[in-house]
Image (tube, rainbow, N blue to C red; front, side, top):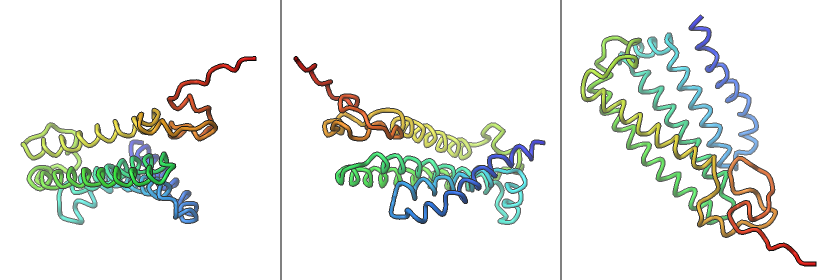
Length: 210
């Protein structure tokens, strides 16, 4: 029963990735759509590697204990980075905003690589030496390297969650609000509806006098 339940997210993620692939190819010029599809694909790889039988088989095949744990979490972190990149690009309307979005995505990529390097280095001295493939991840850290491994993952998870919540849940920062115009798209990403300019942070118009 547990194995069957574990197959549900794998099936859903791969199904969405395959279903969205043709439309992503047709709109390959859209950077935001590409990042969104790669996010779904990375998530599918992550949940697949975390499946118990796949987890154990990959570790035995490569001869490195718990390598699936590093690969699974690494894929999940790439998925979160792609989600952040998608939100940055999907809320960029002007050329200057596109340039700022590219710069923000580049900075996020550098931070992601830094965290992955820390995890990879800690993995060599901690998780890779853990004797129990299936029990790892459900036990307390037994050494400093394993603790660093989990802390690096936790730091990125909190950082990505805050970034996604900020980008997906509110208006743009104040420096972006002065260009909102009447009948433009709402500055809150994801709410693709036309609203008056004062909903984007400016003052409402004065009532007309008759």
